[in-house]
Length: 219
Length: 350
Image (cartoon, rainbow over all chains, first blue to last red; front, side):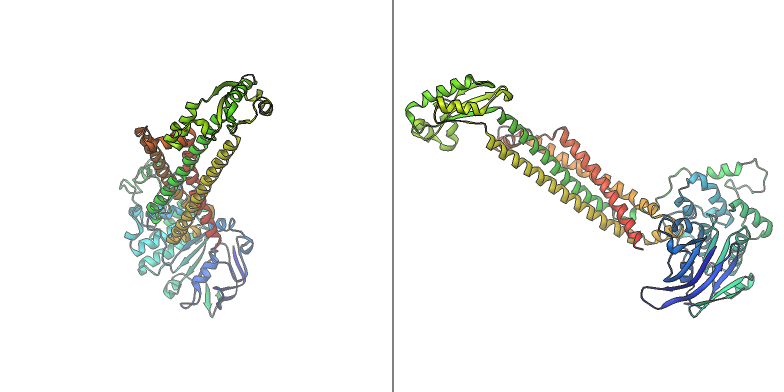
């Protein structure tokens, strides 16, 4: 599904922040991406979400070498990847409903075709009563759930979540984890970037541990 | 691919506590008996469904009013130059057409003894020349009247024969194709030495050159104004992109193509261009109408007479209005296209 081969990443002419990464995210797999703060988790997620191109090496997404994909092909690949940002990145001028529907809107679908699904998903994540609220008035937990709903509404093959439980209380954190587990069981590969050890203990899964610019894998 | 309903069923089956309490829009429990499709209909009746979706790029994030004012000013200037070009072009055509219908035979008075005889001979020759309509000898009184604006009372006090002023015969052309000017001149050389036929070609050529120069100048000003508009739109688009970096980032992450993102900006700029261009175009037309009313109201006054003598009627006419409308659409199109190209170049650079 997503394969990294000898991937290195540097910003401009600086030193490599990630070196010699070689691993694969298999279909229907579940893994944590962990490591100390500053180890490069966010950079790794940027590579995996195709927001950045590697300085060297090859990233293959859904069978396509991303280095050979032009700006016309990348959006189609990105539509198969859902991303939950640590800072949510909801658009403040759109309602919760419109934020969650955004991936479907950019695919050119009409509101009539997706309204029911978006509303159903919003109810499922507990935002049924907050559909028409604007993000600035949502609590941290509500924003987190809206961000997750936006990431999964397009039924992605791969879901990347950056510290998805970092802004919520432990109880909601557990509920969100269960949500990811259920999504995984329904066929979505999950990568959760976290340094929350308690979270990882609640559901045992493969761990990609970033340390000293490289990744170690614990199956 | 799984649907939301699949997710829901899975969550219900495996992890009851994940799913929050689900209450339909009417407040009825989901488990209450209902007809198939009932809940979906009630969802679609909820507030917000009949609203058009909010623009993804918020209108207020674009320096709208300032840019619209700039576009309006540019549109006004562009329409003024188009209108001025139209007036000058039409006036020049009218002059050329009027002059082209007339000829003049000049009879020199360096030998004053037989001026009248040569005038008569030239007039007689002209009357039998094919293509000539009327032949009218300008007599001394008329000649003096013609000179009076330049020479003042001197012209009326002095016998015209004392001045080295040629006498004129005004001819009108009835059939340009039948007229052979070279033959007429040859006839004049034989019958009335010192008489020359003047078809005002020098004058009309200069007129045409001046009109062409003014039209080119107007088009150059139009090009400058449109270039300035494009530059303003480029700056405004870049500012809008910088101000909406978060929106662009999120759109990228959710898989929006460059064309989609560019389209979101373009729709704002198209509206701005349309509004600004329209305001500018209407303002320019109002200026021309005020000018026209002013000339009409001061009919007979020296300045209005000069304006009318120079450009004829100051009314824009159909082609002037059509030119202004074209400029409005051109500005709207340029604004939208420029913003689209700017956004796409910006995105390619990311």
